[in-house]
Image 1 (cartoon, rainbow, N blue to C red):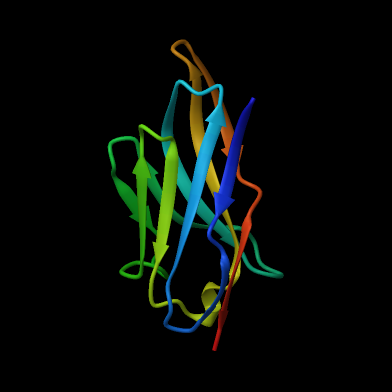
Image 2 (cartoon, rainbow, N blue to C red):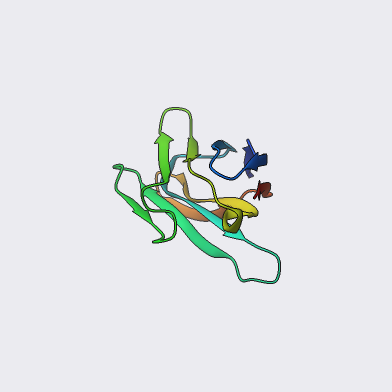
Length: 121
């Protein structure tokens, strides 16, 4: 079994900052890539940012220059530093991990339970 647990959501004023974290535990050989996604009420889930094992990152245009994704391979964690937050960033944020569970493969696509981020104007 693999579990992903998120933390760090909350309520912040426009222009403020929040840092989200996600920790993976359980049967893990390595984590190939992490991602953060978000889903606002009435909208589809969308990609926010991804990071590969080597540290290559990719961001949605709407968050470029404001959000930074980072990972700690030794601790199996990923973080999302969110600065200059806007009301349109309000959503439930989910972490995602592509996990290799053994040296022979056995890949698993895991999701966190979601954490609410609310940005007030």
